[in-house]
Image (cartoon, rainbow, N blue to C red):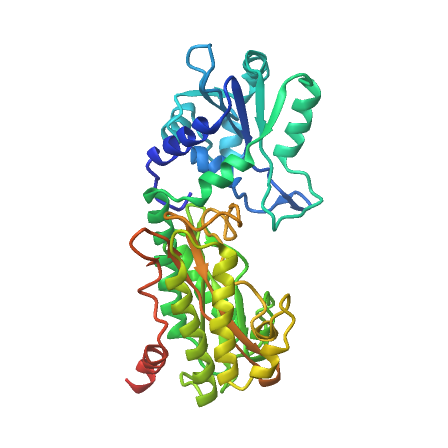
Length: 433
């Protein structure tokens, strides 16, 4: 791993919180992600299952965590099973965890080789009355590809049909929504690396550069600063491309007079940053671009202030919508008549701001959470309003990552330039110098 070692107290705390929520005489089983086939004999780069990482910090394939808080067998309340390495694996694949290393990373004392798992896990399951099985219950997720967790769950239920089964995800969602200080620090590090990349491209972008060249500058800075890479596919969208919300081609020329929308974030220790900035390709906004930019900036700033404990996400988005529609009237994009005659289920402002303002952020860029739970201290959200005007070839979105606290929102991206004047000043500093 490129990132610095993480204090195992984070993972001890997370396991303790999960164990507290388990029913009596229960065992919980968590699997690592598969190595995903790419083509031929190649695999995609491995990325650990977020739930297993959250509970162990182990960043390697073929790892299994078993939690059994009420286990009568001494030393087996927490167990990690992992692949036993050998000389061949060391030569062809590289270093794998020793038992001592897996224990040091996770804080779990009992580490057993996978080759010994079948008999041990069988005994532990037979000592339990209930089994917690894990799956991906992110409500944005749909895939026809069965995960290792799903495959192993099906095998377990077939082998032990008379146990009571429970889902781990409702507990995981409740826990993952509230970040510990350990996690906030990791997210802050991801944001700091993202800041370095943004400042780098501010000095790089000019008319004639290609979107993919901007992307290359970003990943250079990410890897240089110990990030794994991108937390998600970066959006480098100049001109009219900015009106495509999930534009990923990044293959067009950045032209004089256009605004380039950049949505990217570093992944550090599997934690995601999520930044959006929109800047003028030539270093100077037009008067129209300034008006739209400042409208989006005002919405972002006022939306951030709304992220306080107690508000529901539904209330929050409704209030942000009211702020946005006022600006769209001032920009002559919608009229007061449009608002008075609008369909409440499809407000008039949605023509130019069609997505939500915020989502949870953490180990996943769209982090595990209950979207209907009221906002609480310790939650981390993006705030990302935008205005998209296809007929003008102009799309502007701004985004920061915010920690909710009892003393007001904390902006993890406070040091990343966002004021229009500062953007222009930084972009033109090299030219004027």
